[in-house]
Length: 131
Image (cartoon, rainbow, N blue to C red; front, side, top):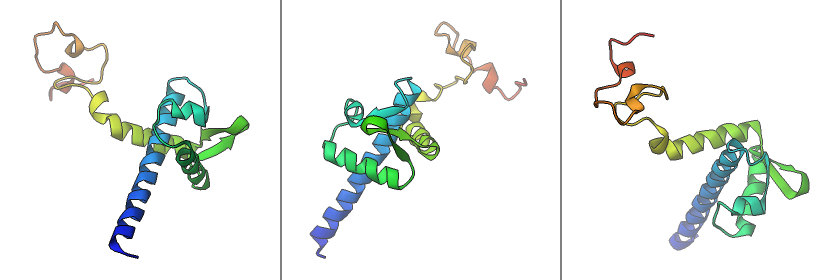
């Protein structure tokens, strides 16, 4: 195989991996938002760009790998392993957007989340803080 052919194969494999990651993330997110547990290709296309045939092919690969199961009426659902992988990939992708801000903790009712506070370091992040 020539170098350009190898490069095309690598690009195709990378695109396939990226498509599967995106499908896992979207299915995980849709499930978490209460949009259902089973999704048709048309449901998924509302949030994903791409050729429907390539998305369907990626879903079949995911079925073979145990991340997705075929459900009723040409729909797909995440397996337990698919939910774990989808959640991990979703968290990795959006980590910067969902982590607390500078000097903020993960306690939603804490003063550090109030824009009217003086800008002091959160008491929960202080070394002297104990529960």
